[in-house]
Length: 138
Image (tube, rainbow, N blue to C red; front, side, top):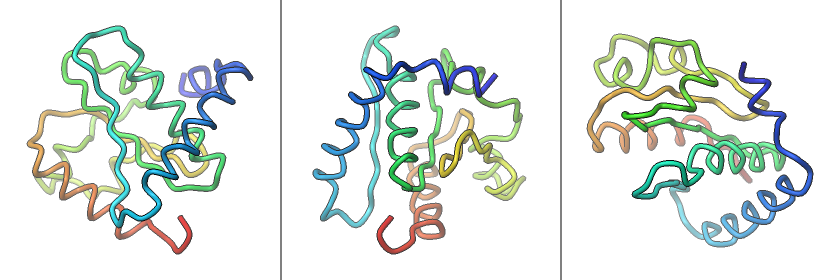
């Protein structure tokens, strides 16, 4: 199912997401912690679609990406990309190691399913993940 979602993008949209990746890289070039959040106040505006395709665009550029679905009402990415019942809450509660909760959906793209948790725990997880996976030039 993950493969279906990953390969439905057409060439025209792929180039738009590559352009967006370039703009994001420019904005983050001098930042130590590199986080991108895709959000909006309304459903159906393409948050999941954009987040997935931006992640894939970074993957093409050999950048390591952690894609996290935190849509608690309609977890579309989690339903389409992962069959794991372990998510960010499992990590927070230390029931599982973070490596056990990740699903690799593409080269350089790991996916973490949604689960109810606090903002502080998410931020701490991102910082820990980025410190363990960031290599020079990435």
